[in-house]
Length: 169
Image: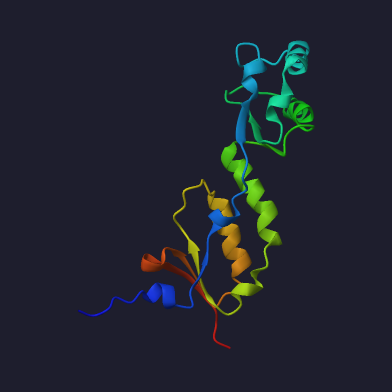
């Protein structure tokens, strides 16, 4: 019987796995409608009082997304005020949802990576992940890799979709 050779393991293909860069830490969603009258009406005095009575220390060293889960029309300052209360405790605060938070985290860390290690190499952006990597991170990674990589694919080595191939100059 012939020996089975793992061609993927022996290839020059470089795998770029966004999951490797996923920032560790607790992610929390805060819905400010909990502090609105019947979830829809912001009464400034009551809103401020509820924020002042909130235990913000529970968000120590956490990543926090702040949004309003109802169709309430709220002034912009309301989200900013919540942010001011969170700022001494949270690692990062964004207006939006957890996906927006993860996108913001990747937007900070992807520019700091040294992509020169992928110079003139075929690269596959790993598609399957166990962590919630947002689509925006894949889009950014492809843009950062393109000036360096000889080719870029997406997916897994056994079933990659070609995305880019540099001109042979």
